[in-house]
Structures are given as structure tokens and as C-alpha cells.
Length: 479
Picture 1 (cartoon, rainbow, N blue to C red):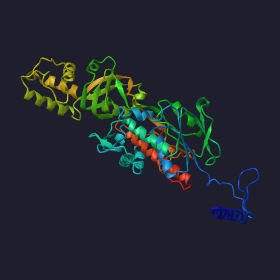
Picture 2 (cartoon, rainbow, N blue to C red):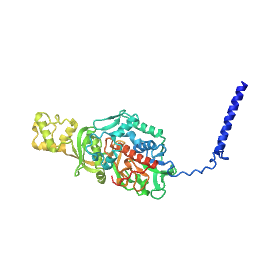
Picture 3 (tube, one colour):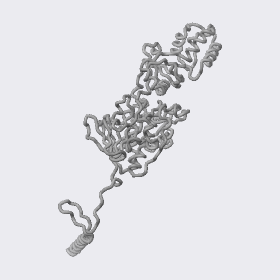
Picture 4 (spheres, rainbow, N blue to C red):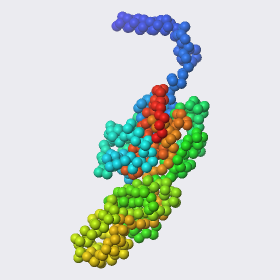
């Protein structure tokens, strides 16, 4: 036994002596008092890190849909990037949690979209370009790869099969954490400044109430969402970024004191709404509320007419066609057929199938018809009045009401000031934009979240090219 221990001891000693000889042969020794290894004898001193060697520090302002999506994609493309999200609110993705009535209408199939301008009242040209890089099909595949099963409704709206917006919120936050993105909430960015000459140096971000010391970054993505007031974009003021004045979009209209509000809860599945004296018009389901009118038809109209209504202090004559796409002559023929088929019936008991009894009686009274009159008693003059009411029924809108907890803003960073291929500012290299911060907004139906995924994806890919020190995409075209 003692012989075996002696042999093991000899072997360990031999290995230790070999290790020491190896260190001496390459000239390494422990640096005095610093616990670091010195350079090999005769070796050249290591050159300091160059700009290309440094890890890019990236700041994303806003932990909404666009900001979180961009952070995930940036880390996937450039894992070595240092990415931090700064969010003003205490909870990230708060708007995503309530969108679609808490179900999260996260995109649209675009099957019912005849022209992109009808889905995006502002920014349709840029969206047409960007959707080729990351469109609704890519968004569907992206979320399903992450385990979110999706379902599409007949109207094209796409929801998680769970009908729970928190599944989308949870998925995005899980990916933010797993990719090593820092997420700091409760810190409102108040100012972005350039620290060097044009195209050089870093950007410095200051925060309101000194909640955080100013932070420097090589690249900054602004994804703060829409702001109904110009002050929301004040953080860009030192950089000379051109903006379109923001105004609200996607809202219902108030009809104070109008008797129709007594029919609250009534839905007409296919109606048309327009503003008298304009060509602005929308079709779809219409909902009567206790304050006025809402539903997809009114919300779409509010998006198309956002600036017009804002300029008129939200006072306008609202024209409703209760018969959808039928013109007055078509409505006359419909009424004539109804009268011919029901001459002995009371007018109050026989009516177009798309209307309910309460709304029909309201429209009869508004047309000057007696509810106990019979269809066979309706003369030409009465038919003209009824057709005019059904096809062009006027209401005086006075004020707006935000749609549930959702809101969208018309306006933002002027699209002429960004590179349409990268969403990088032309005035300030290294500064990018995504989501509603840009002058892009869509109608209800998942189009605004699709714009968030699309612009977040494109901006992230462009920032990743900076991280890898690749040549940026160059485009001289304006969106």
C-alpha cells in the first residue's frame, strides 16, 4: 500500500513540475499584486478595443408592442448587443393587455381589404413596402412558433385561440427575459440628445424627475406609442425631428340629448356612416350607445376623419344609411316590395330584416309615419320620406368618446424624415422609430398591432446591421 501511495505522489509531482516548466517556457507569471497574468515575453501589447470591437449599447424607449417585439428580434439577430428597454409606466405592454376587448386582436388576414389606404388612413405607402418584409402571414407564423395558437374570424380579425390578451403579453415578456433584455419600468424618457458631431458619438437619454441617471447609447429606438398631445414628442426636440401634429383617432361619437340614445345596445350589422359635406365614409356594424354611436363603422369613420373632426372641435353632421350599401333608389324599391307583400299588415310589424323593432319604430316616427298605419296606406310621398330617412338619416355629433380603454393617435414622426428601408432618422443617425410614434395609424381590426410588429421587426433588423457593423440599407425614396 505504501508503494502505491509513493508512486501516486511521484506522478502528481511530475505533472506539477511539467506545468511550471510550461509556464516558464512561454514567459507567463502572475502579475504582482493584481492577480492577473502578464503578457508573454517578447509579445506585442494588445491594442485597445476599436469601435468595431465594442459591444453596441442599444436603448429602446417604450415597452409596448413595437418596443418589446423589436428588442426580441434585435437580440435574436445580434445576441451580443446590450439591449435595455425603458418604460414610463409601471407595467409593460399595458395597451396590448386591453386591446380587442381584452382578447388581443393582434393582426388581420387582410382578406377583406380592398386597398391598403382603407386599412391605413396614414402611412399606407410605407406600410405597403414594409409588409413585404414582415406581413400578417409572418406575424401569424411568428406567434404560432412561440406556442400561441391563433384563430381568424370571418371579418378577418385574428385573435389568440384562448381569446386572452394576457397570452400575448406573457409570451412577449417571456421572450424579453429569455433573450437577456433589461426591462426598466417607471422611467419616463424626457430628452434625447446627440453627444458628438453629426453621424458620430452616442445619444444621451435623460429621464423625468431624475428617476434615473442619463444613459448613453450607440443606437436608440423610440417606440413610445401614440401621444394625443404634442408634448408627448417633446423628447425629440433637440434633434430637429419633423413631426405631424398628433390628434386622436378611433373614437365613438357623442349625440347629446338625441332620442336614439334610448335604443342603447341596438346593433345594425351592416350600416354606412358619413360626414355631411365630405367624401369620408365607412361601412360595417354600427352600435347605438347611451352617449351616441360606436362600433366598427363609427370607429373607421373617426380614423378617416381624424383631422377633419379635430379641426371642427368634434362637431359634425353625421349621416347614417341604415340599409348599408343601398342608395336611395334601391331603398325605394325595397320599401315598395315590402309594401306590396304586406298591404294589410301594420307598418310597425313588418320591416327590413336588418333592423330590429325598436329601431324601426324610431325611424318610422322620424319619417312622420304612424305606427298603426298599414303598408297598403303608404302613398308615394310617405315612401319618399321613409326612403330618405333609411338611406340618409342625419344626427348632430358633438364630442367624442374614447373607445373602451383603447386609443390610437393620428400623427407622429413625419415619414419623410425616416429611411423607409430601415426606419432610421435622416436627421439623426442611430435614432430609429417604430409603432405609433411614426405617423402611421390604422382602423380597428388588428391593423395597428400589425404595424407595431412590422415596424419593430424592420427597425430591429436595421439596428442589428449596425451591431454587426454591416453597411446600412440606403434608400432615396420617400414613403
